[in-house]
Length: 362
Ligand code: GDP
Image (cartoon, helix red, strand yellow):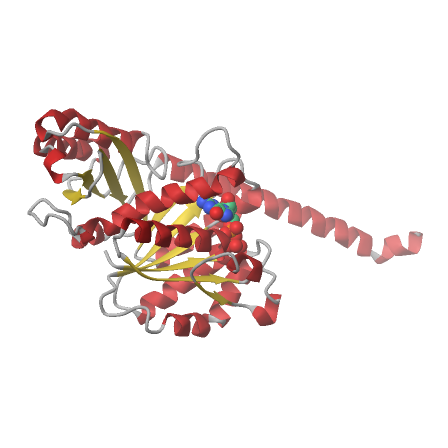
């Protein structure tokens, strides 16, 4: 799939840069353009892709400080600037636009849904969201912001691939320390998915096509991505179990949204040297995916790449009813109610101190 990526906010810009780097290192050329948009100048400076600073009149390059309503307002008022920066980058060959953002902050959280809506109005090709959900250990504000942002992004984008920040995080390092390695994991997995329809070596009947990625995401709403890899034998016949077990691991332990297994549609991409990919294994893995996801729409295809390992990528479309997502939305709701309660208490306390009767007592 030939994509144009737009990263909004700090996480959005960093993950977009990692995706560009991975695509370049692998020589896929599936990323055809990239842009980072932010209200914070300092977050744009280290990036090696083109950038647009928005909201200068409101926040003077200092960011929105976690205020996602302000993030949305700024994106709305400077949307013209972002669209002109994109002019000429979204050429006829582009097959999808991807808006990348951390949903728990301010600029990306508020700005990504506004941008997705506008891009959908202007361009014919699908507009996807790549949204990063705060990890369990992040504060209440991140959860409130992400809950609200996810609802809007899932509505405005044609589909939103969701990545839980805890999902691909290696144990033993804090979330912040881990950001670079998480971003590389995201880039590897999502980058492979995007490039999977761009197979250069070996065009055959079983090779996955971009339309299969698009059709899997067609049900809209929230999508998740699973990944696992393993060493493989030289001979396809001995790799039946390798293909089935990497597919199980991709879905059961390697998804971007833990415990998301029920889906409206799924796509299984098996990546590796074509002569090592067992057809019998792929067929069995697909059947297993049908049972496990409860979906009758399980597509499949190979991604021929020159690697010693075999990898399975499982794209799940329509995972709104997953356990982790429901739990997250519930936490976001509770955090919002708690914030509203505290605000109300503060208002009442303020009123008490503004009370004239009290004034006369002091
Ligand atoms: P913004 O710049 O206002 O849009 O805010 P951020 O992009 O910093 O969003 C904050 C959220 O993104 C939090 O949930 C962070 O955990 C997450 N985040 C920040 N930086 C990164 C990063 O480099 N990688 C990943 N995966 N998440 C990040």
